[in-house]
Length: 215
Image (tube, rainbow, N blue to C red; front, side):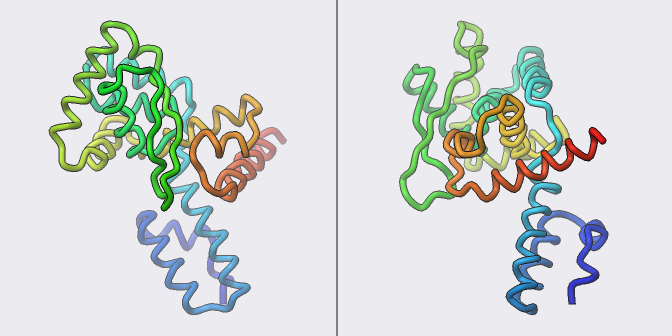
């Protein structure tokens, strides 16, 4: 039943959401063994269409920092914090507000998508710790407090300004740590992944690409 399930199939379905809906529909119609195959394809779709835009951590960090310095855009503060910590956008928003409230350079935030009250550490980027940086941070907090849906606004801003999904910053951070030799289990602890499955699948995919490129 599945010979036509190739990446070509996904390429003709417009957008990640439609692709994932298609895969969920298939899982209701096929056998258990074939369902496992579709689950693997689902992970591949997430990586290819949502998670990894192939961003270089250092280049992206400098790009956002330069834009923040020139344009003084408050959402760049949140994106810089997200990239520095490899966090989800909601965790970056929460930590930004806590940095302002506490005046500390490290804060704890709730990990998104965890049913329990698990928390993770968030670190304030060095560039936001001096006098000018603190002014930019305070400006970001003021702007965030004015919005009903800050996460949505920042996601739209990121896509329009930088042409990539804000969640790609999380995986630019992960790639950066992998290149530095940090183990997937430690990365999962840092980023708040409950399961190693996504990290391991991502790691294996990146390794396979690097091997293929080096041949």
